[in-house]
Amino acid sequence: MKHILIADDMPTVLEQVKEIAGDRYLITTVESGEDLIRIAGSSDPDVILLDMYLDQTDSAEILKSLKSNDSTKKIPVIMTASDASVMELSRYYKKGACDFMKKPFVENILFRRVDVACALKEAGRYDLI
Image 1 (cartoon, rainbow, N blue to C red):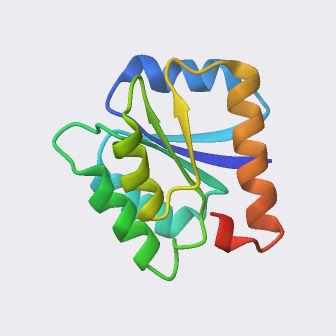
Image 2 (spheres, one colour):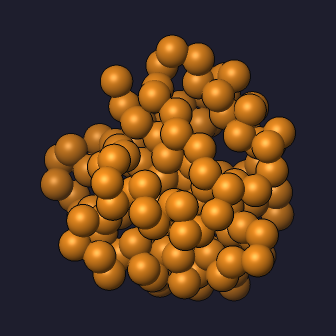
C-alpha cells in the first residue's frame, strides 16, 4: 500500500483526503512544517502533499529542506493550494516540487497524480521529481 504524507493546516482538507483515499493509500497527516520534516525522514512516505500556504511556515523553505536531506530528497513532493500563480508554481518547481494539485481535490486527479509520482520514484526517475 502506498503511503501519502500530507501537510496542511486545514483539518477539512486532511479529512477530505482521508475520505476519498479510503483503503487505497496509507495516509499520515501533519499540520506543521517541523512535523512534516521530522516524520518524512523517519517514515519514508511514497509521496508528500505539501500545502503552499502552510500556516506560519515558508513552504518553499520546507521543500528546500526536504530536497537537501539525503533521507527525504528522493520523495516526490506535490504542492497543493486552492489558487496559485504561475510565478509561485515556478518557484516551487525550481526547488524540487514534482507537481501541483488544486484544492479541493478531485478523487480521480488525486489518484492519478499520486500514482504517477510513485511510479517515477519506483523507476528511479528522480530527475523528474
